[in-house]
Length: 332
Ligand SMILES: NC(=O)C1=CN([C@@H]2O[C@H](COP(=O)(O)OP(=O)(O)OC[C@H]3O[C@@H](n4cnc5c(N)ncnc54)[C@H](O)[C@@H]3O)[C@@H](O)[C@H]2O)C=CC1
Ligand SMILES: O=C(CO)COP(=O)(O)O
Image 1 (cartoon, helix red, strand yellow):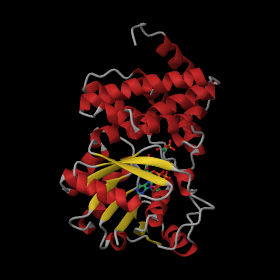
Image 2 (cartoon, helix red, strand yellow):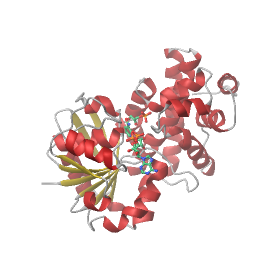
Image 3 (tube, protein in one colour):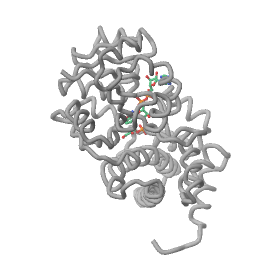
Image 4 (cartoon, helix red, strand yellow):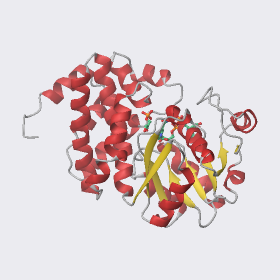
């Protein structure tokens, strides 16, 4: 039986652990706090992140990363992107030699501008062929409830992509394999920034026309950046691009969209952070790293630029809208 260690017990780490267990994989979760590990292992519930969802009996949990990693075939990295490096540094020695490393995080590291698979390769020294990324329209709670959804598992080594695919395929979760790790990771990181923009527009009171315009022009800038970095346009037209963009930008369950909505309704960054109750809205940090990455490749990303200026340079949402609409008119 395949054995997976899921490191990180937030909303998505927990929902994905349930998918794995439902697919027949043996799962041990790692949680930072021992009380949470006990709730998951003994109460079969994660009351902090997925209250009311009963977790399968074949999920165990511990706050000892070494124990979680023992004998793992697949190591699932389910911590926020900006803390992945520090966490991995503590875990590297305990990671089994040939395990596949699967990243669930959707972000670009600030400062280094690295994608998550690059951070993992740098910290662990693992060959890139051992590193996979999972991304798609996967809001945690509906998946934990068993609502059908699809996803993409990207790995340059097709054998490992298949291994991960088999470990998580269930009656409600349908994973597709892909070799385009860059496309998957760029799609996942960038859609969070565009979801912030959609939230801001919605918070101001704008409706579907505005949101569809932001999503579509957002996709155009994601494709520009992705292809400049070597992604395949088809990946960005698929589940890890358009699929995730539409789900996140449209859903009131999205943390990024909700965060943007609070800003659009006139809230401050501080009040939006406070209202998030410790849950990460990855786009708030990634807007800065995506913008810097785009700049270094000479790629224009006006929506990302606007989100960065609202979140980090004090630009008001109405001024950002005025600025975007005042740009030179041009062919599509
Ligand atoms: N929640 C969702 O619907 C989805 C989330 N993701 C991505 O998965 C990643 C993880 O997100 P969630 O599980 O939703 O996050 P979350 O906000 O629900 O929880 C974060 C988890 O990481 C832990 N954590 C926070 N800071 C940490 C640190 N410095 N060191 C170690 N652990 C830390 C928290 O205790 C918690 O267990 C993110 O990159 C997110 O974009 C991807 C798909 C769906
Ligand atoms: O990545 C997600 C859905 O695929 C979750 O988005 P949020 O982090 O905005 O909730």
